[in-house]
Length: 268
Image 1 (tube, rainbow, N blue to C red):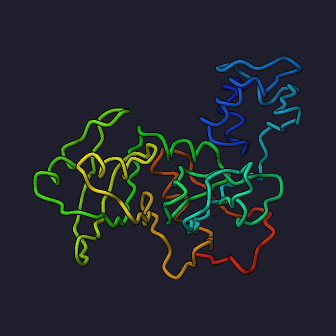
Image 2 (image 1 turned 30 degrees about the vertical axis):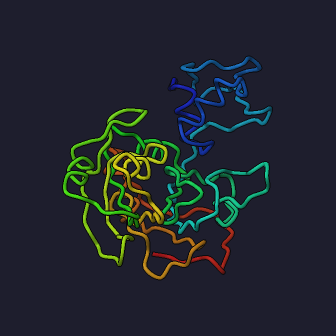
């Protein structure tokens, strides 16, 4: 039986990172196929004896019947980086996650170092890739505190669209939530996750963000009672909700070998 697929899709599916990350390391020449440096867009047969290596480390790509999708909700604190490691030794979001056997956590999107709130992680690279892709229009919701007065004309701008350096952007909704003085809270939603997009939109109308918390990704809310730096395992029903949103096959179980960090474990 032959099943040829794009290399970046295969490596993403077996938990080596999001498809975007895999494409980057292929372009950097860090991936080899049968001893030859891989090229972006190359195809491999997952049922063959092909040997794939990343940075010299051999990667198993054969389908495993017991491979299942696992998703965590994590409450990212301010001050943590969305990176596997930091050359300066600063804390990263991956430091607090539970250990996995024969797999790895992949972040679904990013939050900058000064933003806190909901960050989803999965063991399924294809799920991560689709949930981030603009094609699927997965809504993100943020609670944001801004300094300044939001006049009606500025609010219309933010909803209709503002020209940023990387193209047109807009909030899908903007709701006032209260506040005293010149510091006001709003809830906003958008359907993409460009770098610092929320902050840049407010700056474009002359207002400064001084607090930013992601409270929802798709239909997944930041779990109530979850401490900063804590994580919660999502239920099978929630995982399948996410998979259905991005047109992936549904899962029938969630069992996967995890060494639990009992100080952080909260199950939804």
